[in-house]
Length: 94
Image 1 (cartoon, rainbow, N blue to C red):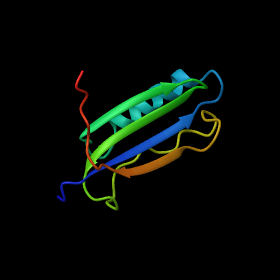
Image 2 (image 1 turned 90 degrees about the vertical axis):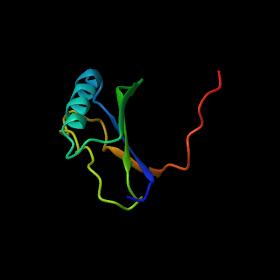
Image 3 (image 1 turned 60 degrees about the vertical axis):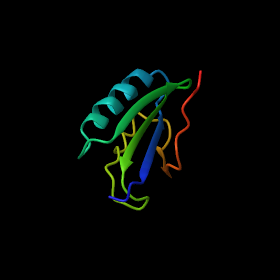
Image 4 (image 1 turned 135 degrees about the vertical axis):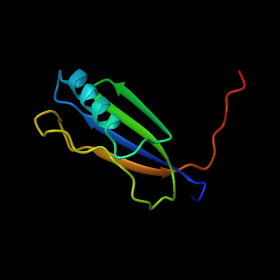
């Protein structure tokens, strides 16, 4: 391995009122990835938005497991996806 950490971000907006359902869908799909990430975090925000962030060891262009698209009737718009390469972490002192 290269020692590089790649972070995948997956964000979707549920149809109004279906945020809890989308969150549970994302939780289940993130637990079924082809392999286990170094770290996984699920977040929610107003307007029924759900964010899944996963951290992987590997190079930026590596093939990595990603969450699929939810059923079209569950989401208000297409899923947004971003890929980042970690350049270091800063720990809080206080």
